[in-house]
Amino acid sequence: RRAPAATPRTMSATAPSSSSSNARNAYTNTLLRFAPASAKESKSHQSGAAAGGAMLPIVKGLSGSFGGIIEACCLQPVDVVKTRLQLDKTGQYKGVVDCFKKIHAQEGVGALWKGLNAFATHLCFKYMLRMGTNATFQAAMMDDEGKLTTSRRMAAGFGAGVVEALVVVTPFEVVKIRLQQQKGLENLKYKGTIHCARTIIKEEGLLAMWNGVGPTIARNGTNQMCLFTAKAQVDSLLWDKHDGDGKALHPLQSLVSGGLAATIGPVATGPFDVMKTRLMAQNKTGVIKYKSALHALYLIPKEEGILAMWKGLLPRLMRIPPGQAVTFCVADQIIQRYLAFEEQRKREEAP
Image: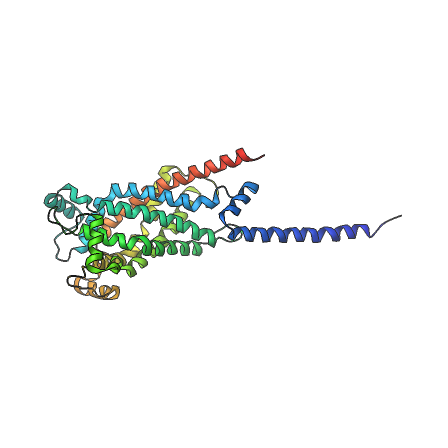
């Protein structure tokens, strides 16, 4: 005898089972997306979907800090020249080369590394926070397929810039600028990084460490938005490198990508940087010329011309693109080696 109902019952039983299985998988993946690191690591060991994903923001943060220290040691003289040019209201320096020569002749070669401790510490913590926070924001903004749209990448970069400006950049740059604006090597008000910070807090209050925080947030948010978006685009266009594809870049490729990606930010954020520098250089125990960021934005072009808002642009372009090239070269290599290590460990642990 035939059993015509058998097949429909089998199909009917199979379909709900498949649907239920898909629903459970979707629910599990959703939970894992917001679960603690331990749950994500457990899932990684089971499926190998993302090797070391839970540790990646930390690794990216550490890689950025190493790159920042190397950058500071190499490019501190350019940053000193940039600060002197931005604070020059009388035309003492005729340009980048003239500024280099006068600092060297009048104050000695050591003056070109003024504020190095503050600058190196600043870059170390800034890049650690920048890389780690950006990686965290990007992971949170990815869609269900693990992809990141350009607009979300820009938002993640802007968010990372805002965080670094509030937590690290503003207080460190206040100290750095106060040290760099001192001329000569003797009878200086600020004897070093820690002494400078203590003196500012004692004389002007703790909030003086966040002088110029408004333009700093605008500058860093815009700069990191441009930087991380441009880096991904350059990697894609030049090297066919995409997020999560496992392709490793040669150090020279990272140098090129980092340098090109960092050229947009300084041009876009020049006015913010000049306002920030002028506000941070003001000592509240003396005459306060600029009452706020908006007042500086009004007064600087009025007294010095609109191009004054881009003072120090050339030394910024001499420092930031090469600096980011060095940083990304170091960071990319550390991240790639970490991912290769995790992949090897995953293969060895596989049954």
